[in-house]
Length: 249
Image (tube, rainbow, N blue to C red):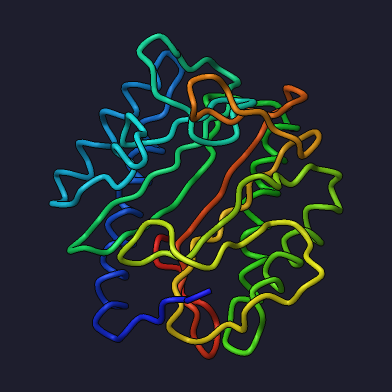
């Protein structure tokens, strides 16, 4: 496994890629409302990215047909935006977006409430978000990769939620997906030793029910097998010799 170490110049470019993506997510989140189609979200996201002089890195990636992954309720990730998929009061919607700035990628995801949602759905969103922050406490030089995984698992397990195992986080840089893979569930092996200059996309995907998922016939959309709600929270981070730097927040 060859984990890319970023130079000072590369880190500055990734900081800017992350800063710009954070702006996109802020504007997308503010636009979410009942009656909006998932295609409208995708179209807005692509416009925001291009207006910043960047390129949406998901569009046509391995054949994915959109710029934003829009996943509703029991859809875990990679939901394909559609004109006829209309958000309703009480839904939750996960937006996974990324962009390329001067050859460098950023990647981040957020789960949003559509209007008023149930307390159970709100807790799932909050636990998923907090699990990211619990995990990256271990994302510092001298720790090991799977310290992140184990910290996420330890936190989420307290709530009885299912941690998706079929999909993981990843390294990121001049490619959207680089080594290493970053599981969100407990690991027996330590994984690679973390070093300052590594850039990682840490992304817990948490189900209200079991961890098992299915892949739909569209070739992309991943759903919870038991039909339970799923939430997703992701940021691109920089490993340092101290606290990790979150580039997309």
